[in-house]
Amino acid sequence: MELIPVILSGGAGSRLWPVSRELHPKPFMKMADGDSLLQKTFSRAANLPGVSELMTVTNRDLYFKTEDDYVSINTANLPTSFILEPFGRNTAPAIALAALKIAKSYGEKAILLVLAADHLIADQDAFRDAVSNATQLAQQGFLVTFGLQPKTPETGFGYIEVNNDSDLIANSNCHVVKRFVEKPSLEKAKEYLSSGNYFWNSGMFCFRVSTILEEFKQHAPDVLANAKACLASSYLSTGENTDSIRLKTEDFSNAPDISIDFALMEKSNKVAVVTCDIGWSDIGSWSAMSELKQPDMNGNRIIGEAMLHDVTNCYIQNEGRMVGVVGVEDLIIVDTVDALLIADKTRTQDVKKIVTQLKHNGHDHHRTHLEVHRPWGTYTVLENCAGFKIKRIEVKPGGALSLQMHHHRCEHWVVVSGVATVINNGQELFVNTNESTYIQAGHKHRLENSGKTPLVIIEVQTGEYLGEDDIVRFEDIYGRI
Image 1 (tube, rainbow, N blue to C red):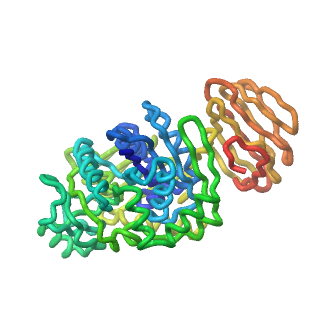
Image 2: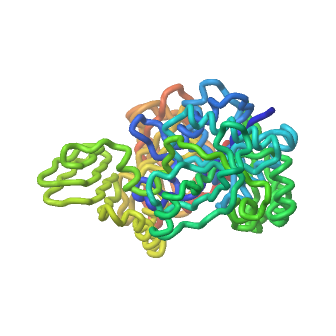
Image 3: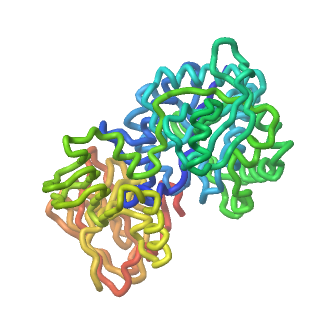
């Protein structure tokens, strides 16, 4: 039996702004041990018995950032594959695409294990046992979901009602699903908790390829048809122990925007649930994030450097600056290099409304941090004023910016670490540490790091327009033309 975990990595995690943003969403948030949620999901899946390959479905803008996260933890060199969407279309199209690709690579008897990229699971042994039960059910032809033991009357999750007398595997927590329930009122959630028949819907699934494709054919043929069309016209890139499929925008734009729950799970008569207690959290808000940190004697949870006076029951997180807090209680304070969040602890779900307003106003703080990741490395905006912009650019060993040209800006490059290989208007030159070069507007140019250590430069842009869209690419080793 081939077991293929499929990590779905999408969404912006707007309730965790300002750390989570569209180009640095929740899966890339670092936990206390230094690993991101995405890295934890990869490791959890890769360590399951029988895994032949790990697939990730994500936005194509996050492809290289995802690869970077995987490189440092994929010590066993597990084969990886990627399906790269131009934009999100919910979970049903993503799963259909994954099932079709796995059917082609491994056959329809293979088992898919669908995992969200941004969940935290504390009990790895319980997770492994739950997956074992789920794969047994999947081999019997069931669409399997994972129901989580509720701890509180939670109104932010969907629920699964089970038939307690319908155990499918002896001595295990496997049941036929009676029904799915949308996010309930507090009163209903209390009833569900006391009944013992309701479990949180985790958003994790397991099924045999043949079963899921047949259910798509019966209940959501439009989703399946579009997935087939998208794969037929997609671009395939292969590398050492990895491959990626880049979907065409014009084809994927026709994909129905629908979840796997609505498309199949609520319609099929083949749905089973494995109920489990795996120490799960979706970390859906700053309140949930704060619970991961032990409080001090005043109920405060602090990550970073802070000075407090007469402060109780607050969560404070910062990225380098000293934070002083006086005479408050029940607050969330999250300070990043370019944005500060202060919220009532009981209203952290409303943080997403700030993100909505930023989008409405055309403010880029909903989308990027000052440090921006590119396939070749990173750049950080140090200052941005009328007529000039200053960046710190770091290029990975072997990395190269595209051969490009700007209409409206000139660029001055000063090398502060490493040696830069520069193409400027057809000429190649090497720029050493403490040396500089000048790029005139309209000149084709490229920056490359041919060395074995990171290349760091300071770039000063000058001109009438300094937007990131003033780039005309002619060649690119990362396929971005």
